View 1 (cartoon, helix red, strand yellow):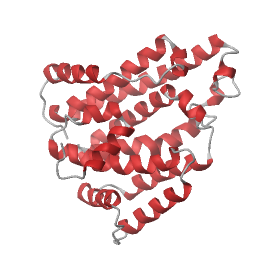
View 2 (cartoon, one colour):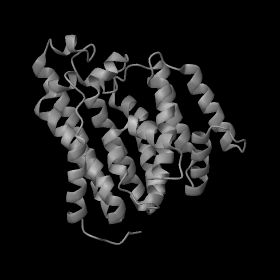
View 3 (cartoon, one colour):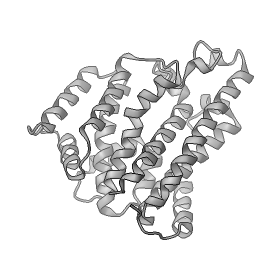
Length: 281
């Protein structure tokens, strides 16, 4: 498991995204190492803005060290320097990382997203570019990139739905609030009209399904040895969506996540059911 990477790369990734981490350990070793290097970088940046209180100065110092490293001056931070090296190896576009950091920075000063357009602007930097990074890491053909971005968008959207209560505690609402009749998504507000809340959540989940189903059309570009963990993560996000769709109020009761055994079971199912096919492009 990425043996020559420092252990904390793995630890940071695991703490930040257990579902995707538990799927990603089934990538071939070389791809797994690249994924760990990517996610260590993005999780550290995200941790600065999600901590309570937020570490605003820490985030800007992290960003500054990254920009210097990108311009040729090693930062001395192995997570940053490893990511910069990975960026060069995989030919990441600087614009992708800039967009990611803009979305993370937005968490320092923006709390509510009123329209879908506003939400999608945030999602581009926080999730779609992660799809681009992953497509490059797996060395997929250019035709796969729009699907990779769409998969990132879909997964981020179900995260927003799943994490409503957690985000409210942080003072944030990422789902387009204008599509609801509520002043906020705090439970005290949504309880005033339960039917409207349930309809609102199910509408957001239908949007997720639409994006997810379209994104999965891009699976034809992914070799089986890479597709097994990718599809497993997708399957687990759909499992989460179905749980919430059935009982929307669960988002206030707990953070819906598949148990580890279910992820590993789905890995086995996908391993034996996904057909072998050649990478297209």
